[in-house]
Amino acid sequence: MAVKIRMTRTGTTNNPAFRIIVVDSRAPRDGACIEFLGWYNPRVEGENHSLNLERVDYWLKKGAEPTNTVRSLIRKTRRKAEAVASQPETTAPVA
Image (tube, rainbow, N blue to C red; front, top):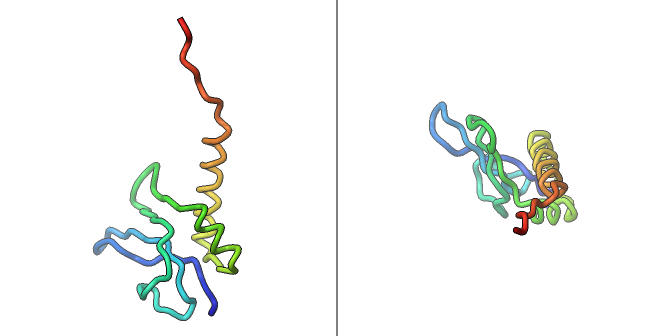
């Protein structure tokens, strides 16, 4: 079974939102999914997506193929996670 990581549309008319899911590549866009990995809302500024990177890595190792848009969201999420991890922790001054 060929597996894809892609988006399914949710939301209302003229207000799209998307779920990032793992699905059989032959399934329809809004069909049943294997696993829910995150969400993406293009109409929100700032924090407009969230992904479970551990599960994304699991599915990529299993051979799942992300779509181009999902691939770019994975890259953005990884960069954001690396930036947070590389920031030095601030300690409160001891008085």
